Amino acid sequence: MLPSLAIPAFTAASAMGTGLAAMREALHGRRGGLAPCDLPGMPEGIWVGRVPGLEEVVLPEALARYDCRNHRLAELGLRQDGFEAAVAEAAGRFGAHRVAVVLGTSTSGIAETEVAYARRDADGALPADFDFAHTHDLYALPRYVRARLGLRGPAVAISTACTSGARSFLEAQSMIVAGLCDAVVVGGVDTLCRMTLHGFNSLELLSKGACRPCAVDRDGISIGEAAGFALVMRVEDAAPGSLALLGAGASADGHHMSSPHPEGLGAISAMRAALAAAGDAPVDYVNLHGTGTRANDAMEGNAVRVLFGNGVPCSSTKGWTGHTLGASGALEAVIAAICVADGLVPGCLGVKEPDPGFGVDVAVANRALPVRRVLSNSFGFGGSNCALVIGQG
Image 1 (spheres, rainbow, N blue to C red):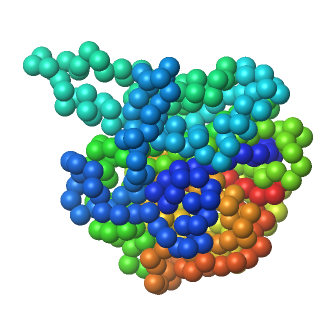
Image 2: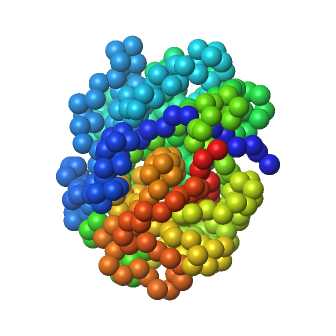
């Protein structure tokens, strides 16, 4: 069993806001960030969770070759909440070579490849100025963040579909236990692109408006974009009272390429592993993966009911942000941290009547409750499942 890790610093940027203060305001004020899609070339009538202003974000001149929408969003996230300073302090204490970077993404900078593909020459060759290795390549994200933060430790890309950002925490635990590093920058970044939106549209999974996870009349997902980052290290190396990753669990049920196991067997396995790693202490809130599709939400409702009955409040926060794919697990870990700090159970946005078939306590309005531990779920295509328990160390 892997030990708990302290989380002395964390931040995020999404459609609900950039930085912790904006996220808190959105959660408490029940102000979501979903809006009709205004990006060119996208399916008509869909809503997305877009982070405004990314076109104006400028990367450091020395790292200009990394320029793409995904790295602009990463840059925007890194600038928030004193995160850079916290990483610099860790690098000064442990050595830059002892701080690793483990980041999840599902599409990376594919939007840059889409633009390059449209600029092919008469022979079909991509333009000579297209730099795949520094933009679209999955490894480009951790490579950029490591260079941006002046680190020299291992850099790893995680791409396990929509569990990628959550899996980064689990991989960081393993790396610290193995002695490869003393601290790790974890998280996930994914941005809007045509491939994702058209792909989900072809599967008929996109909602006709803002997504309504857990609603009896839910009709699909809204795609969003986000960057979420956390700094993790051994509990004894962090300041007393730091937030902590108390447990993590993962499974791969391989039920279907794009559909979850209807009984949620893999989800149950991942949640049980995370709870066991956290000492089987009770949790006060379950942040659901809750995408808004009929099948995913029903599966997760069943899985939560098996473990908790209707005794633990649960909700999905994707009504604020949309489904941010490979970044969702990292973003929702940051949301879980806010819930612990603020004693908040954020009720699902836009849900008038939760699906009674779930048989669980779905919050549809915000609740002020003591929240000591949050179980945060992430599930992905191909049967990938991951759960994190986040709380006070």
